[in-house]
View: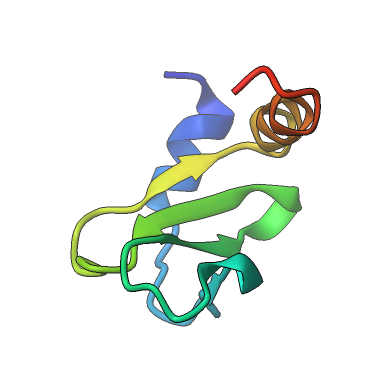
Length: 73
């Protein structure tokens, strides 16, 4: 794991503001996303918020978003 990625997993996430997609339409089966320092993102399962969230660097998150917009995912 890179040093940047390791630092993301060392962050305390208790004070983060989590948000659901506006497309969730009240469904309880979606993910929540929170902003991390440096432009990264944390992602968790809304049904099980106690589980350890996944954490993405800013470049990983940008690549993911680009793939979604391009219809690759």
